[in-house]
Amino acid sequence: MPGKDARKTPNTFLFFMNFDSIPFLETERLLLRPFTIADAPRVQELAGESRVAESTTRIPHPYTDGVAEAWIASQPHDWRKQRALTFAVELVETGELIGAISLRLFAQGPRAELGFWLGIPFWGRGYATEAARELGRYGFEELKLQGIQARHLTGNAAAGRVLEKLGMRYEGVTLQGASRGGVLLDVVDYFLPAASLGENRSAA
Image (cartoon, rainbow, N blue to C red; front, side, top):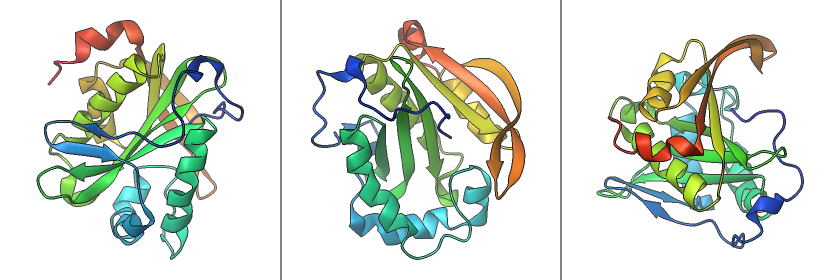
């Protein structure tokens, strides 16, 4: 779900960060970690479901061989170039990979766009909210972002509920703000300023 103004050159406000490797983040139930090529079959299995692809504009369907490998291989480069930070979402208890979450950094200043997807068996369990809350904390506290935005397709009400639980502010609907398969689609926009971080940590 990244915006059109995603970073193409290094972000000067992140000069103090170590971009050599993607960090590890942990919550009560989840580990956010770098993807490895060994994750590719699992990514293809989960993201290959049509309902997962239909909930986003960036996951292709059908999800053909080689797509996951190329996507995973691009992630360290995107982080080194300060364009995006992408994590595998893994269950702490079982080590099972259940989805992905990311921040795409913007050129205009210390802002980013949140994006995520989970495999169908893991919908409705609060995992997306838990992962997004931790990544938001990292974005504000470590990356020193001043705001995080997110958007979802109008038909994806579940994503909207996740964003509302994070305390994100509803900004409105952008008509034909995204496309999938050559079809223009409406999207719902949200925004969370850094000043709201403390207010929303305990949101259910």
